[in-house]
Each structure stands twice: as structure tokens, then as C-alpha cells.
Length: 412
Ligand code: HGY
Ligand code: MN
Ligand code: MN
Image (cartoon, rainbow, N blue to C red; front, top):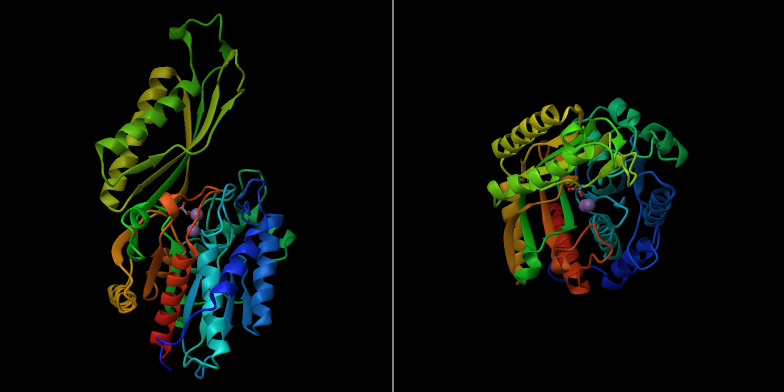
């Protein structure tokens, strides 16, 4: 089979991206399908129906990961593609969805061309990749790769007080299939994803050849001081939790500048209590997202943050409680597979650039257990986790065809 003649059905892939994008659609554009919500269920049901239409073997495990498989001539470890279909609450059409639907498109293209692969070919979507409702992110693939225990994941309480276990049951995705044993059952894992950053778009590059994923540190801090009257309490008498939370936000921004260019820092969620104009806040609940491709640098940033918060809390008479929400070390993908993808991309006369992923991905959970790599296509102006996320149809087609050729290359 010549993989040069094989190409995906562009219209079918585009129509599925649009169709899935209507599930959880927001007025004014964009999508909200937070993990395990009704919208996530509807999206899951839609993609599962497409998998069923293709007659694929579908397995749903106890954390709700869904893996669909096209049988191979031989019972060998599969080549797996996949990503996620849950989104942040201001999501776009492509983050995660592209990797799942392009994987399905690759399988349907094999079927359309009466190609029975030597090894099984699978495509999966993994539960709660985003982690915005239930931390940590990449929860489903973290359980699959035994980085996170199933029980810990099931008992996780979300930002809205709901529990993963109850929500999985409520939407009917508390599956009973055995967990895929990545080491034994998966020959290699390839994830197609939008870059979500500005590099490929700015440099007009067709394909990002992803060498790895940077380290991620998510922490939640709860500062407690004393609420008091905003008009009668002299500044030096205050135990103002809101003040210190704001100082932390400025501190981590300055820390990232000091540790430039690879350190990133974000205070993404911040709630003050009682959150009233004339009351000094006695509580501040906030998150800090630190990222760095270098583990020791990431640890340095975590330590600097720790020291700053405790010194400020002491100075302002606050109690500090903190929780690690996610902590993943940097991951390197399989050099041979990365090289192969780069070669195939160049054979298609795509321009390519090697880069490290800024965002976390399910692929980073597979990487320690089987040869793993990722393919990036550009995000317009690097926008993502934003309703205006966009990737041009030609770039979607490039990525999906390269994914197809990588799979065909592997199964030939
Ligand atoms: O936060 C991340 O990097 C991913 O989108 N979950
Ligand atoms: Mn993603
Ligand atoms: Mn995302």
C-alpha cells in the first residue's frame, strides 16, 4: 500500500469537528464541555456513536477512558492515537478534539481503502485532560499509566463540590473494561494536537515536531486573615488575605521574568471572601500554575514561591494552607519516532520545527511506557483556551494526513 496515495477525507473531518463543536457551544462562539458534565457526556456519546458506526471494538474503563480499536491481522500491541474531548469553559474547536477526530478519520480512511492493518489501530479519548473542574489535569491517562491511583481519582472533589466517582456514574461512563496495559498492549502512541502557542503561526511553519512536554506544577493556596472594616481599620492593623494573594500574583510574574525565558507562572483562579467593597478580605483562595522544561529550574521556582508566601503570611499575620493539585516532571518523547515524523513531514514538503510543548497532554502519560510522539499544527496567533482558538482547514488536513502516514508507516 503506497502511503503517498492515501489521504484523509477532509470534508468528513471538518464536519465532525464542527459537529462536536456544537455540543456545549457557547453563545458568541467557542465551547464549554467541562469534564463529566452533561455537555461532556453528550460529546462522548456523539464520538462513541461514530466509533460504533465504524464497527470498532470499544472499551470504556473505570475512569471513563474510551478506546476504540480496528482489529489487525495479528493480535499484536496496537498503534494508538488519541487525545481528549473535554474542554475548558472557554474552549475552542480544536484543543484535544482534533487529535481524537483525526485519529478516527485515520481509521475510517483505512477502512474506506479496505486496508486491514497488520497490528490493531486504536484511537482513544481520555477523561478530564483539562483538569479545570477536577485536578489534576490528564487525570484519565494518569490513571491509565498508574501515575495516579484509580481510587484517588474517583474520590477527587471538583471546584463545584462534585465528586469524580459520582459524576462518572451520573453520565454513565464508569466503565468496566480492564485498563489498557500500556507497556504490554501499546506499541506506540501518537497524539496530533494544535500547538496552542504562537511559534508555528508566527514563523509560518506547517508542522511542529514535538520533542517533549515541559514540567507542570499546580498548587492551591488558602490564606486566612481577619475581616475588618475598610473604613475604620488603620493599614498597619490589617491581616489582609487579599493583599497577600495579590502580592503573590505580582511575585510569580516577576519570578518568571527573573528566570526567563523558560519559566512560566500564572495565578489563574482567585476567590476572596467575603468579597465585599467595604470589608478587608479574611480569606483568599487561589491557584499558582508554574511550568518549566527543566525540572531543577521548576523546583527552584516552587521553592522561591514557598518562601515568599510564608514570609508574607508571617508579616501580615495570615494562616497558610496549601495543596498540590498536579505535579508532572518534564517528559521527552521517543527520539526515533520523533525523527520518523520529521522525515515523513519533510517528504510531504511540509516545513517543520522541533519544539517542546508548553501545554500538558495525554501523550506525556504514555511516554514513559511506550514509544510516544506528538504532531503539532499551528494555532492562529497562538490563541487557545479561548473561544477564538482557530486552525486553518489546510493545516488541519496537513496534520491529519501526517498522522495517517505515520500510522501507515508503522503498520506496513
Ligand atoms: O493545562 C494544560 O496544559 C492542559 O491544557 N491540560
Ligand atoms: Mn489539549
Ligand atoms: Mn487544553
